[in-house]
Length: 316
Image (cartoon, rainbow, N blue to C red; front, side):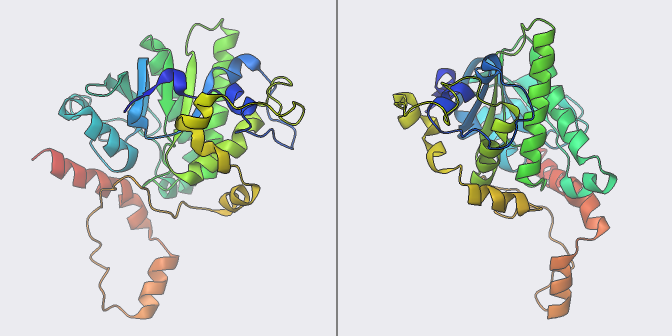
């Protein structure tokens, strides 16, 4: 069953329903009631969202092929037509995005944003700028194609290994800056930008970080000042009901300490080729060394292996 766009909770509604808690620290940006109605947060399968004049974003690989995680889920839900169009686009650079039709999905377009492989991009300190670039490119494509809504997954936090907390901060800050620039130009672009999480660790990161960049704008949104309020029925029973127990300070603190995403995604991942060095009869010292160190060659091949496997699967 699809989720109508009207049921995607905006930040103003989440503050009102006490699903978002204002930060105890000074916010990084000014409060804006307008922006808080233009940004949404939901935990859901992104393919279930119905967006009449919007796009969902795929966390794509550079070949734009059907892959693992959210990319695979989108390709599978959209049908073969999506892959056929992607094969005509000659791939996409890391930090950039391309747009296609949506085919069997309940939205107008799919925007394919290629985030960085964290271990590889971090060596040259380009991880944050590349991640920011693909968010900006995706939003520009949405505006250029007359779309009023865009929904982002947690780009690069799956098989590409970007830590959830770091990735969420880049995403939130980039969206805030983009929407502010739109306001300065008189608006008329995106009416709604949604962060759609699937994993609990991504959800926790967004719940903690959003109040830093989109603080509550008035007493009705600021739950530290407002009296107890009735939670709207659509928040109690709708897709956002999972927010009720996700803003634990302890969980968020533990998340910040993580340097890499360790829990496996619930989406089915597509494995890369078997490492010939992984043999069950290697002695214990070699196993410990492999656990502690990732070689430079393995880092450089991580994305290429992932793409090659999928090219074999879908071109034959």
